[in-house]
Length: 392
Image 1 (cartoon, rainbow, N blue to C red):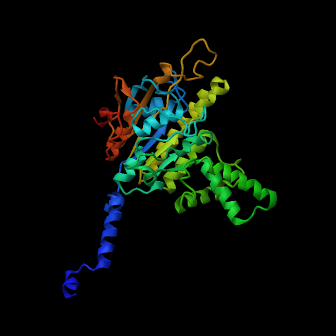
Image 2: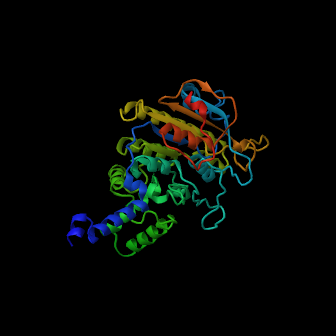
Image 3: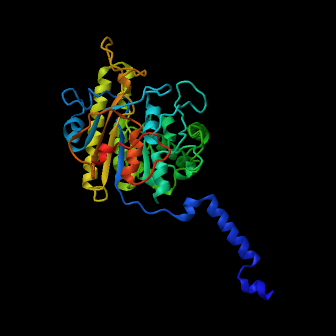
C-alpha cells in the first residue's frame, strides 16, 4: 500500500492520464494548439459567372476599367492562365471554384446523382481547412460570400478528407443563410400562428435539406447570429431593401470586413452568368458591377488599419466563355471549348511587386498553393505548384 501510494500513480490517476492521452491521439491538432495568425490576410475574388479576357483585362475592350487600368499595374498579372483540357476537367462554376480552393483537377459528381446539380464534395482539403489546421483561426474568420442563385455552392466549406473536414470548415455569408436564420428566429419567437407557422416550418425544412451533410443543424454560432441580427435591424425581412445579385455580395463582404475581420475570405461573384437569358448587356453590365465591387473592397481595406498594409487580393475567374462570332451573343455558353479554358489571375497587395506581366502559360490549380505560400501553410494534397512569379 505504501509503495503504491508513493509511486504517485493510483488507478484513478492512471485512468485519467490514459483517457487524456487517448483524447490527444484522437485530436492531436486541437490538443497541441496552433499559433495565432498575424497575416497577410487574403481576399480571393472569384470574378465569376464565366468571363473572357477580352471584356475584363484587356483595357481597350474592358467593361472593368478599375481592374484593367487601375489594379492591373499594381500587381502581378497572369493573362495566360488556363484550365486544363484533361478528360473530366469541366469549365463551369462549381468545378472551377473547387479547382481554385483545393488546387486539384478532380472529377466531381452531384452527391445525389441529380442531373444539372452542383452539390459537390471536395475530396481533399480546401485552403480554408489548411489555414485553420495550421493556425488558430476561428471559423467565422474564414468566410465564403456566396450568391443567392447558387445554393449548391453553399457547402464547399469543407472536404471529406479524413484528416481535415468539418472541424476545420469555413463559414458562409449569403442570402440563403440569412433566410434560414430568419425563419428559425420567427419560429422561436412564436410570432407565426396557424397556417402561417405551418408554411414557415415546411419552408425551413426544405431550406435545411439543401445542407445535404447537415453541417449546421444548430445554426452558424453566436458570432454569425450577431451578424445576421445587425443585418436584420438594418434591412428587415422583406428582401426589397437590401441589394441583390453581386451588389449584395459586395455589401456582405464589406460588412464582414468591418464586423468579423476575416483572415481568408472568398467572394463568389456570379452575375455574368445571367447572359444565359440571351442579352449581351446582362454579361457586360455584370462585369462592371463586379468592377465597382472591387473598387469598394480595395477602398475598405485601405481605410482599415487591420487590413491596410497586411492584405493580398487574388482576383481570378472560375472559368472562361465561348468565343463564337456567328452567335448573336458570342459569349453566351461555355462548353469546354478552348476559350472557355482561357482565364487570368491578378495578385496585388502587401509584398506583391507592381507592374509584373507574366507571359507564360500557368495553371488555375496553382492558385491554392500560392495562397498557402502567401499565408504560411502547406498544401500537400494540392497538385498545382505555387506561382513563383508572385514572390519576385
